[in-house]
Image 1 (cartoon, rainbow, N blue to C red):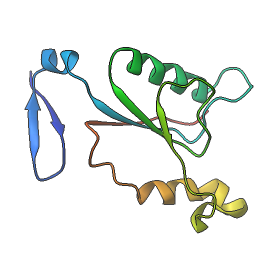
Image 2 (image 1 turned 180 degrees about the vertical axis):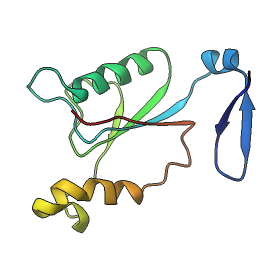
Image 3 (image 1 turned 90 degrees about the horizontal axis):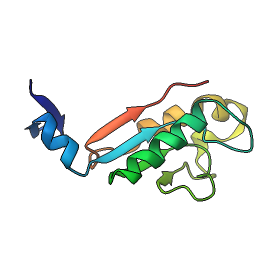
Length: 117
């Protein structure tokens, strides 16, 4: 069984599963919320998953509207606070998706989108 990963649409590469386990992947994780002082929820699961992926040697970047938790071993990309799409009440609800659609994910081997709580 072959697994296909795409560096970009024009140039797909086939990679055997055993090779994937041994290689360092560049992973984008999309999750609107990251953990704060509350317990439970998808934000906490995302934080733990990303920390484990980094521990296993992968390069992880989370795309989120929230700041990274203290001590997070992964990077976080956030919308600029002045970004028009994310301002105000409607921006808080719908703007993250608009901002996300404008991002360049071409450098990532894997893009993993998490669901909400």
